[in-house]
Length: 347
Image (cartoon, rainbow, N blue to C red; front, side):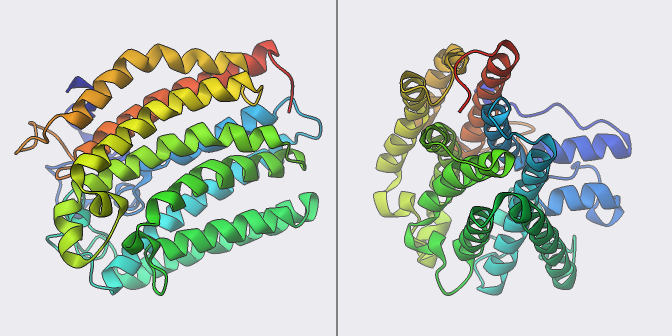
């Protein structure tokens, strides 16, 4: 499927390595881990390739807020930096927790689709913990600054996000293990990030923002559903009961297709109730490609990765991620048009 041809061959040089890692979560295949420069190494360790999911969530919030009374560009910028750091620390915490409980091994997908930070020797456990601490500390400072300007709800959003990030894989809750990881992602990338960033930017939170957060939350959930479908053969034997493990692969694929199409329905509904401006309907131009995505979700997974495919054994996750990145970009573009031409009412 052409939609998941993620990249061309890596370009030579340090910049080429960084770009390759940002597109694939992997270092260039021709470069040993020991020879990686520090930037490429940490791009791989933090899985920075998936940060656009959070960037778009923040941009959705900021573009909804930009014409609202009380909007502050610098507070929006702080909130956006905060959620990007939170996503980074989430990725690192998940790797640390799954390693500590024995889930991440050399034969588990996390170490197959990209080098595992600890198991591959990219960083030590101490370095990983230091990076987590640095991200959390920076987020704490951002929270204090924003809370001083906007009030206690900033603390509620920040602490709620931290708890959900930690509980996703870490004991005692281990939400992913009990079929609660997917709802966790919906809440985090939808209401928490969009509403939290909007509130931090303007200091108030109309009901429309909660509605506007639903489509993007659904979109991000499709990525995790696809990833957990890919991981059924690995998760089921370990007792990791993700929603795809609980439902079984066939029903999980149907649910994922429903979420993909549900995004478009949710955008139309949000426009209808004036929670999103009408230029958000730009996402509908991607519907023919979305239909191909649903076809790929119905088709059998290939027995072997296509040539040059960088994240095997993930397959459905890649399909859903590319769809999310592209249609998420269209949603942001529609909101840019709305902000520039002042369509709709400020929230």
